[in-house]
Amino acid sequence: MTGKLYGVGLGPGDPNLMTVAAVKAIAEADVVAYHSARHGRSIARSIAAEHIREDHVEERLMYPLTVETTDHPGGYRGALDDFYEEAAARLAAHLDAGRTVAVLAEGDPLFYGSYQHMHKRLAHRYDTTVIPGVTSVSAAAARLGEPLCEAEEVLTIVPGTLPEDELTARLAGTDSAVVMKLGRTFPAVKRALERAGRLEDARYVERAFMPGERTGPLAEVDPESVPYFSVAVLPSRIDAQPPVRERGEVVVVGTGPAGAPWLTPESRGALLNADDLVGYTTYLDRVPVLRASQRRHGSDNKVESERAEFALDLARRGRRVAVVSGGDPGVFAMATAVLEVASEERYADVPVRVLPGVTAANAAAAAAGAPLGHDYATISLSDRLKPWEVIAGRLRAAAEADLVLAIYNPGSKSRTHQVAAARDLLLEVRSPDTPVVVARDVGGPEQSVRVLTLKTLDPAEVDMRTLLLIGSSQTRTTERADGRTIAWTPRRYG
Image 1 (cartoon, rainbow, N blue to C red):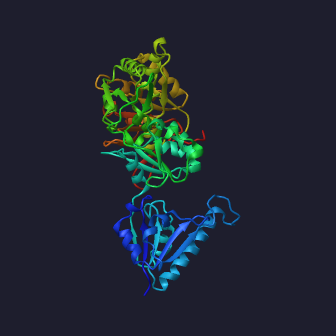
Image 2: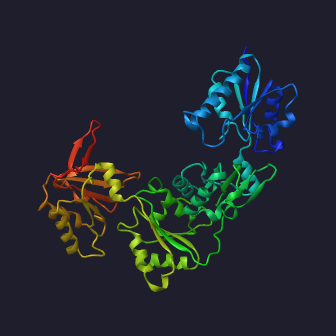
Image 3: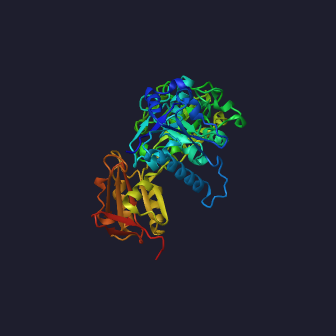
């Protein structure tokens, strides 16, 4: 009969936070194993010390290295793999002899823990039970005395060893977060928090429930004083009130064509960080409720200048404002309106940023294949802000230049003639068999993407939620095995 393997979670450091199950598993064991650095001391052993008996066989699993410098032919990872194999073999010898083995682990055994390497090598061969423990994440939140996440908030746990750009993206795009494994990674983590606009929210917890515990605002921590056993925490912001600022800012955010799936991490971060959301009500409705203290200011689609002025006035009073736009804010959207008003002298000291978003043209093109694979022009058929004669002239020029056309704002309840007029104009220059993509509600619940020809384009089927992609002389269509027709424009011309 072989012995039993226990992975025993000990909690964050205080022996009083060990579970009853953990104490029982240690009492049942013949062998108590624990990892340690080369100095031989083990935090795991120190937590469980009062439960280790003289008759316990102790197996100290000593890491051969603690930094990523080694002359091992397999490098750092190779040296560790050899160590884990050797350690697992030592434990297997006890298990084969019928002894019960308890492997001690700080926190939880399967959460960034050393035990997991033993588990992967032994659990499929021996009767195994894992005893969960209080994680450092829960311990840090408890020591801060602040909710970690509430309601629909998303908690993201990331290692500080990620590249700085990746850290920035993940921290910008989440509600609450914990960054593990600080120490030498602390400067990069701090920069990532600052770039993500979250530094003022960040908290620091060192050695939670251990001697030498320290907590406080992360921005005030000396990087030279940060040990490995510390974490950065972005707690819940459901009820967080904005700080008093002398000057706020305006960030123009593109939500993409259909909301959350199309948001970039940077844009999501700007929405999370905003004190106020300003925008056309339809676009504001795409943004989920992020926290209770955030204010929303919806308005009609025809008051862009007034909306921009309102947002800039909020920023002058110290508010951090996100102006919400569909698609990309710089493509027939709110960026121009905000920058135009911001160019007035009274707003000269208000910071304004524009964040890119997925454009409707790119979304429609991807859904249809690759019709924008070569040169193309983007034209709006709306004559509310420019005369039809200008639109017609640009359509003809682009068609004669043999550009693919991405047609925005093709029609509405009050504008019904433009699509037919544009089609007839293009038929004077283009072949009747020119491929046309009719893309409606791309990314939304009513998405419809069809590939027609210029001669079969029916203006009655086009509305404001539709985008048209009209091919060049080089654009091709292909019938796929699944019955779908795709359109693509070769990168080689002629």
